[in-house]
Amino acid sequence: MKTLLTILFASVLLTACAVKEPRLSFGKKCVVKDDKIVYSYVWIYDKSLGHPADKKTCDLIKKD
Image 1: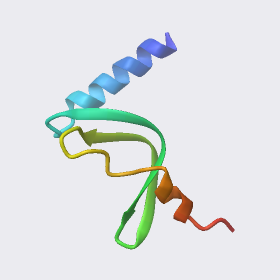
Image 2: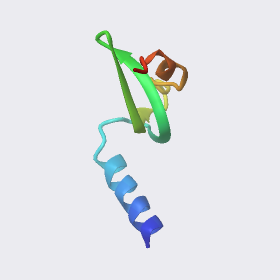
Image 3: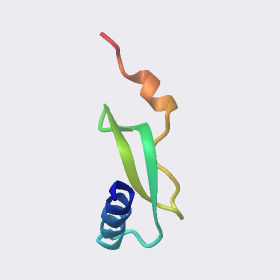
Image 4: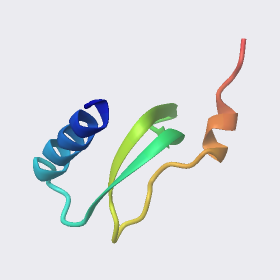
């Protein structure tokens, strides 16, 4: 049941997206935007443009 709800939720997200060739990616990835590092565990990106984030950028986050 949980898997079915996850698939349904992802489908709704992808149909409401303005990206022409949407792809869904899971896992912590980071990207630099306006001198800040932004991270997420779920990414929706355009296949033709490629994935804007990667795991290596997450190494730039300072650990206090």
